[in-house]
Length: 353
Image 1 (cartoon, rainbow, N blue to C red):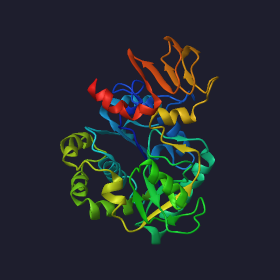
Image 2: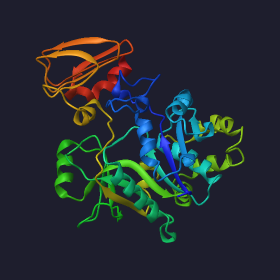
Image 3: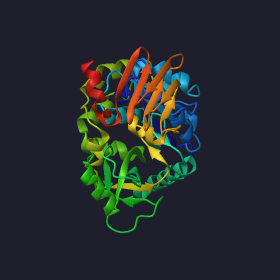
Image 4: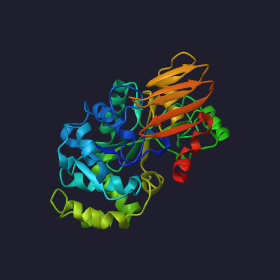
């Protein structure tokens, strides 16, 4: 297990969760489900049984560096890597991978977003261990593996993984036929009915050698930038180099840049109570409900209101009457009231605001 590493991607803002998630405190540092732990803390703890604390790297914005260390006091400051700007997931993963190469060239690496929900951590850890075992075999040195989630509904907010026809037992590695973009509702229904499609969780496992080879093959300009940084990693000149060269990286996701081009791509079909909790609607699905099927957090008097999310900042009071299928959220002098069915517009509304 000493060569098991985990990269936590924690640089996003989570604007779809406005007004809870803002620039000064984005979603990964919040406890939106009322569990007593932030998303990033929960992510760290669920990987701890399979990755030593000293083998975590968190990639985030420089503005959030101190917050990461407050939520994850087990980490040393040099385990928090700071992007000078957002450039999507491929540069983020490349940076952390090249840093790991200076520490442990034979590393096996898991990559995860900081802000997902997992309700069955035992099955999750079994799945990650299976992935590590698979990519650790010499014959699978260039295998790139992503965790696929058995779909429970025709979801339009997730990308899908297409598997070959036939049975695909949960927890077993299987090859991938292809990837599908977030579908409309009709296509999503077809995917679920077909039985050989999984949700793409955005959690990856590979050997360090395998992912570095993939970067050199499919994103050679990006690989060249981070190769140039080898003399600086884990030195006091690392941040200056990253600040100077990170902007030259292509703005591209690891899915587009690498996974869709790779030949040795695999997945593990799994069902461990996963959600990316990327929207208020997904929070509503997983939150505890009170009378009237409302998800309520904070001090609020609710009357004649059903199927709604009420999220009120501590120290604030609210009265909510006569709503059905609405979202009412207040934090830090900012108020949002909208139909839950229209929440896909929140990001653009925030930009207009």
